[in-house]
Image (cartoon, rainbow, N blue to C red; front, side, top):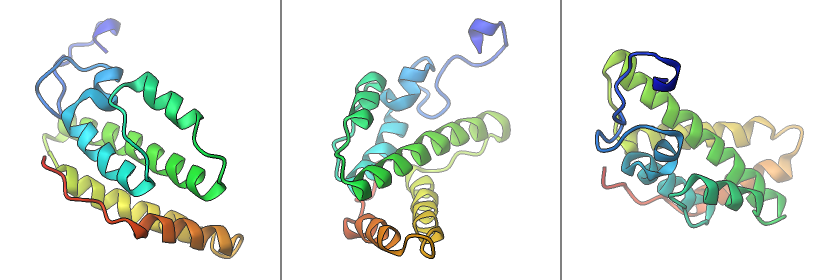
Length: 141
């Protein structure tokens, strides 16, 4: 936004430690990385701090449909909610903890996996089971 000439704070609103950029926000920022680490734990992958490495990791996910779809769905949720929280901090000065955002994502993933139960009950059940098998550890943020 600074490059577009808009007057905005250049420091990351989530960690207040570094200049905001895509690479910082996804996932060099300690806040976003803590959230991504909780989600990655549920997906049984090792979270990467580097955006390009994360993209490569998503492209190289195993071909097993359940794992691949669950990981991509979870990753998309992480991207959305990190950006949403950043905007919330900017526009409303409301800041939620990593655990609070994870709770929202957890509910969203559970709801999404259940939403296609009628059309694909086996996939729905497998994704839901995979998601809840490994509880996420609480974050330190």
